[in-house]
Length: 465
Image (cartoon, rainbow, N blue to C red):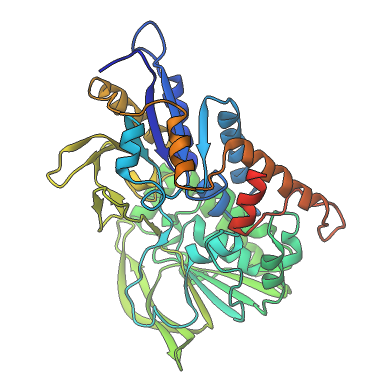
């Protein structure tokens, strides 16, 4: 080992998990005479940074989008480099990274939809929520068109993603023009004939996985009525305990009960309705001629501890589309151990493990690809701290890169003809998207803040201009 040069670290993934890990590394203390000297490069398969925050959060979420501001400040410091449009496994291999870096942190997240094993899940009109989110967020690797031809739509799941999907589906397209949605998303939603969107949760109101802000946002949609069902408001001892001990659940149950009382006293006249159902599990997606025509749900009851038991009572709903928002799943990476049941890189507290279960020197993981798709930004920060702490504890066995010079990786990418983008290039793309917004108008005639560029090659061209 030598400490005459900086410790070279590559981070694969520029979402919050990757950027927070890089930030913690730059601020880490104590190797010799003060701060650890590190040189960090972040790689991303997309031309633009920020991962899930750019391509996995609903466009009408200004608070969540505001996280980009915090990430922006970290990257703007200039002590972390960004290489976009570089795909791990095709453009650059593990051997390539090991030649240029002493340690590699995988922060690739989880973007695939978890599977739903019920009859009819593969029918035309049955969609993964993640695919729909990627469409309305203008993900560069997804088609520009989405089939929005259903009047009655089901969304399966009781988390924030389910709420996002249901809110976007039920909202009037003109009300989304204040966001950064591109024209093809606006036109698709504008033409949607939807009248009713149903959100189904397996458990009761005291077991929902929403957060209060996301729940309250449902009520802010113009010309959309919230519809609740009194028979779904069942509470057992476990439910009462959850409400008593968890402030968020207590708040959300009060919100739901207030909405239910308001519904009893107010005539609902909106052109669209957003239904919230609890204590129902999907049994079958019904089809005719290969297309979704309905949804068969089983009623559940609480088991006394906040869990559920099927009652054997089934209800059929007419539906022309079903969106599965039951969780995300990580993707396997070349030459890295993978747990196919959990959808994560095999690891022990962020140290990547091999076939024998032992840590692989120099390989680490953080974020959802490390722990699975659970937890919010606070969890991502603490998760990154754990991984970085282990990396620094292992530093005696690092400093293994054969070509650690900072310019060596650029020479390598150039030699392969990879059109990588940089942080300076992101500023160009950022300014360009803002100028597109300024040149267009929302429904009130005001300039828009931003309009996303959707084509990958166009993003690269602008970034590298």
